[in-house]
Image 1: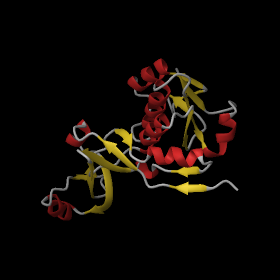
Image 2: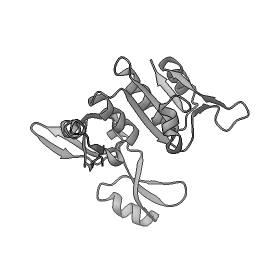
Image 3: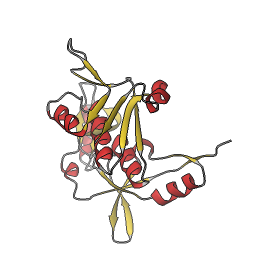
Image 4: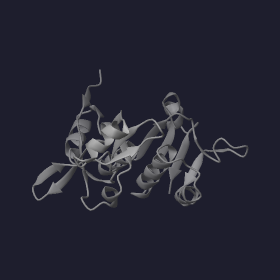
Length: 208
């Protein structure tokens, strides 16, 4: 049997990340307007969420380091399957020799890409609800992509083909990983097609 280890991960973010100036990530329960106003007096930033009530919003900064990366490497070298950076990891800010927790949520795709880069992986697999990445998604001229170069990925992102909070962070994180080193590539597909994707039979491959 192959041993499996689950590792709680701290992910370092930059205290000067611009995301802290404009918190956008909703977390926690829904509140009425009156409840939200009371919570805002305690320093929480509250915003209305699609007419369903008010929720606290926090920043979603970019990950800059995985604190437990050496532990992940050691477990992998010892032939463990490592489950980690769950939910994007626990955001922390470095202050001298100490780490301080940050009121933030790190995007799980970006955290996974950063970890893959730091453990020197060759392939990053991002699993989602569709078999491939598409441009003009849901439109008559919808086109599913087998391969995506970094140049085309950047162009399609600029043209607004990928939805925020959905496919956009996946494509951005996949492209960042592919760009981070020679020979690296990323695969975006669904869980049930992962094996076929690794074999090159389906999914979208993003590479240099």
